[in-house]
Length: 304
Image 1 (cartoon, one colour):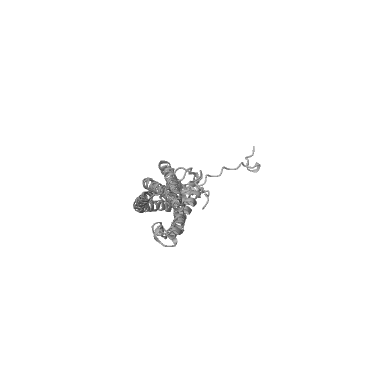
Image 2 (image 1 turned 90 degrees about the vertical axis):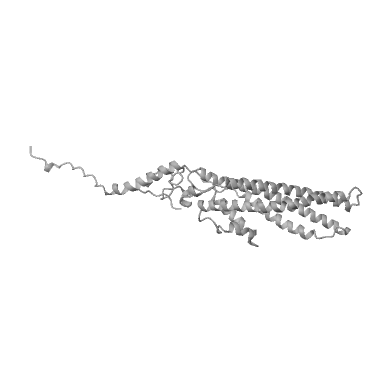
């Protein structure tokens, strides 16, 4: 970052020529935040508020489905526990009810997950476009990875995380002088760790669930698989809630950066900059004022 130096005319500007809000901090007549951003960023930035609302709704539905899945798994565990203990108050109707709810969840969760993934990626791409405007040189991966990272084996474990963190930091709020503040990234850690954890735990549960429930010795193994599956659903529930917080905060930060622009003040500052630059050569070419004559010495005074 180039600190603001004394430049004739430009040094007299009071506010940034790009945002019209914060004081000039660089030689270009812009504040520190706008100097890091792409030229014309304020006009090109498109807040993702509408997409964010759609993501909220879909993630909320995913959280609800995950909560019901936890309840169904606990119900199944209790029912199987009664069978293992030899209780006579468990009937096939209990398991039929559990199976009906589980089948209904499976029928809803898959299309819901697909719809959520599509809308979330569209929102994410818009956020990355805006982040490229706010900090063009602050990203470790290209914009195309906001889509491709989710479908590429192995790298999907950390590329989306890097992309989100870079967008988060690029969209950070500015202080009074235009320097970016560092927002807490704890909610990002919670979102990504629980999401990856849910994927891993569900894989483990799937491997453990390959047992024959008609074999008495396998019932306890099936219970353990159901408990692990319940843990995966609980992680998915936390990940959905954390994702809502991430979407809300990131969208709000970019919206705040856009709302912080004062176009009238920026236009006035631009006009003042142009006038200052045009008047600077004329002031430099103007002749210096004549030096006042010195007082005459005694020898040059006329005789009395």
